[in-house]
Image (cartoon, rainbow, N blue to C red):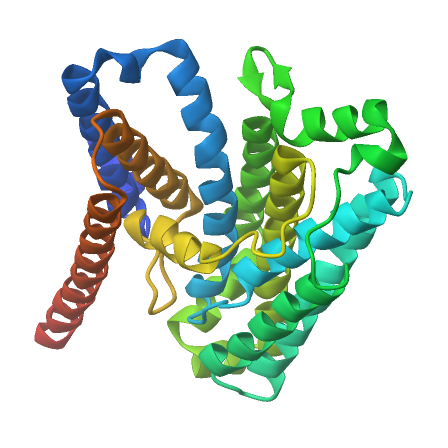
Length: 337
């Protein structure tokens, strides 16, 4: 019995695990409460739609969480979503095959990630300023790529069959009864969860978020590690852009607007510290689910959009305050020792 208790204690003491568990408990409570108010919440179709919508929040949350754990932020993430949606749609409208369009889109997003990593990691620009600049650049590319207008339907040139395959793969298709968007997000989540929790790169990401100077002295390449975090963020943003392109069947210049903040919210609600050095992608998963379940539930009870935003805002602020209080408490304990 004592062995089981010690193992459970070890699991709970993993940094960020307590916040992740709290987020999952909150998710269950929110889901059940809204289900009691409106039983339609429990319907199969609503749950499938919920998983698909949550997947977008999860992806931007994964990207932003990687960056926040390093103690930085990525304000360009939402604009990279829009840029990716426009680049992929514009290429397909011009007759480029969907596969090539996907590859080019991801490569373009990676360029933004490298620029962010170098500006923040090498040149020591404040991440707010550096990524604010690349945010405007990415959104500018989204506007310019198709002559300052949204694209036509992607099926016009590549054909309805190719367009349908692209749209089914990223948004409308189902696998085992669940929309493909969720499976894409789940695969990406598993890959980056493994990277963050089981690899040297993951340990380095936590190290520079905890104490960048100590990390340097330990031999961590701060520039490379910071760049890796931003690359993860932009890969996630590119995938979300492709999903939005598939959903609409066209490119929208305003796609991804405010998604960088949605990513912050998903991470923070799940216990990822915006101060750096702590948090789990498991928590980000829960945070994205909490956000979408709240939004879905409030929609089902006909709550105004303004109320939805206020509720999310209050939750985010409370989550950050809890993180600060928790860190202060740990600091006091160390001093007393």
